[in-house]
Length: 148
Image 1 (tube, rainbow, N blue to C red):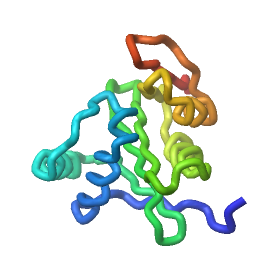
Image 2 (cartoon, rainbow, N blue to C red):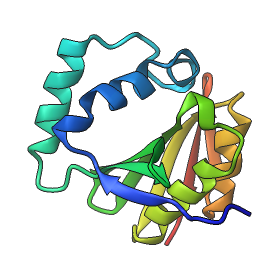
Image 3 (spheres, helix red, strand yellow):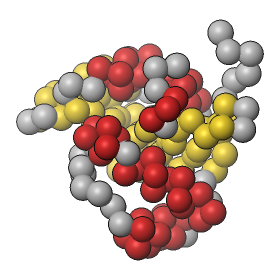
Image 4 (spheres, one colour):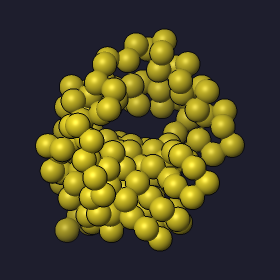
């Protein structure tokens, strides 16, 4: 057990480089629905637009002062929220994913869903940990959901 728990901070434009680094990590891209490399310009435009929303819902997880991952919450429909997450490449396998996603899932009411690549067992374990169950498979993706 780690002596400290994670701290989540709402992302700001000052976090753009970190978020882009996490997004463009080869393993993160392989696990994403969109596997392409995102340019700095594309990312900055997306992040500014996203941060301009009433609830941007992007959090960076820190262990002490080290950023260990990011969690994002997207409202798909009024009754459905989709979560996505990414653990920093050098922090994977330490339980940070479960902790950071469970913090956000605990404060998210209603139905919570996530799309995961079929081979991504680490994310499937996180989804199970927060009470999600696999609902169906569509090509290389699995859709997981937790009913509230």
